[in-house]
Length: 95
Image 1 (cartoon, one colour):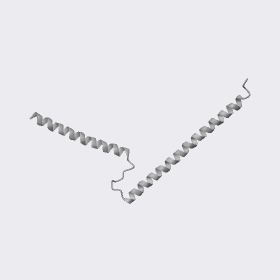
Image 2 (cartoon, rainbow, N blue to C red; image 1 turned 135 degrees about the horizontal axis):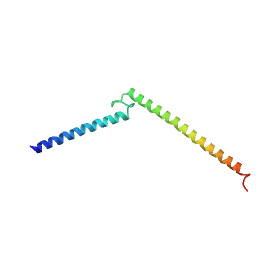
Image 3 (cartoon, rainbow, N blue to C red; image 1 turned 90 degrees about the vertical axis):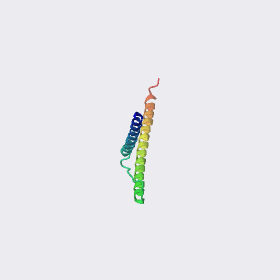
Image 4 (cartoon, helix red, strand yellow; image 1 turned 180 degrees about the horizontal axis):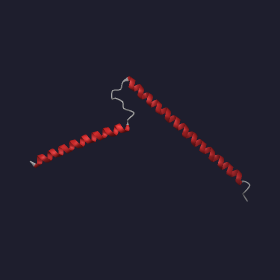
């Protein structure tokens, strides 16, 4: 009788763990992808919406890349200018 009870208890625990893990997975995915809740059956309309979202994100990424490149170029120009200025200032000082 105790073996049956232990077996039933183990089955119950396994079922509970499975249900909890699926609930956790669902909660994790919902937390990760709140703005991309798209149904499994993709219609033409939702597909075009998805493509539009991707285009928007690519556009934002391109803008960010351009700003980063511009910032790097500005830093390099400042460094070059400082190096030239140092060389110019040290020419007369060398003894």
